[in-house]
Image (cartoon, rainbow, N blue to C red):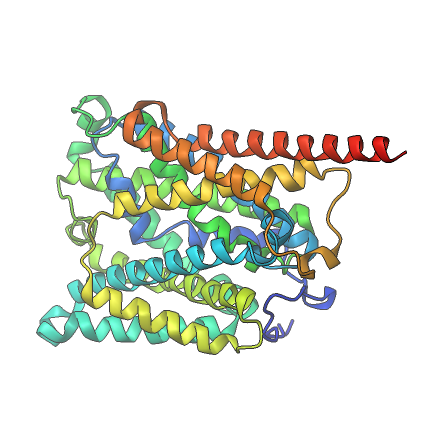
Length: 431
């Protein structure tokens, strides 16, 4: 079957004739986006826990985060709209510009991190040939390659790149790395040895949840092409839960079992590890593609008449500059920063679509009216941010993701109910 590459779809709804992606497509897409070197790096932060604790933390955090991710994607698949447009009924048309700008900033940051770690990994493989030019060469190479994928669009990347080649290569390399780690002499000791914990267990859970949450501002950019809402939900949930759990555990295992803090060096130390690292790099580019493509789509929520390629090129160039200029430091706190902003915002979105307006869902026209700012959504969002930051700073042992999410949901529900009561009171008084 010949797949037609979709035209450039910005903030407008996707027409029915291009809604062709099914369960398998989304399982492949989100399992692919859930693996990668940066996920292994995040998993290495859990290395001080024992094996069984890491399994519980990784699985629970992945399930919770992936449920949030898949739920956010429901709005996109139902209305055929990208994520930032889905926030218009929640925050208002102009109000949606605030999370849009924050999303663009985080996507440029993610692009920089992705290009940086891909270039570092490639430099390990080719440093003998390129010497000091190895890292900058690969920064430029991966920036251009990810940009070309972004210009191709989601349907082409998913069905012509991921499903035919990339995902199978990364599955094979991941199975090989997992086998080598499990059969290493230190693996048995890791099952029983208890090391001093460097971070509280619920803060570790926040770090796991933060990874799928970092994708929810992008999810509808891809799930809007779904043929069925149920298929995109199940594919997103299953694919991301599997890969995120697997790679968090594997990242922790590489550090704990091999005793090497650098996950790239740890993979390279394994038998045929460089070959496995090369195969992971092949698939890693889809993460850069997603960051660049969604940044361009997000830009168009504010400037809809500017072509996507302009914003895609801008994001790729900015990501390359970051990769060359900024060291890969404080990545753990970058994840928590993302969580503090986007976990409560997802709570507001969830409350609006699935609670407040469950019996009165938005019409497609509401996404394109000129309501400037809806303060109610901002109040609930701010309350969730305050709760998240307060917990991380003052009480990290209780975890911040679920309390901040529930705070935002509760505030949104109460404010909506209060608004309805005021309207009903005015109607009765006018009668």
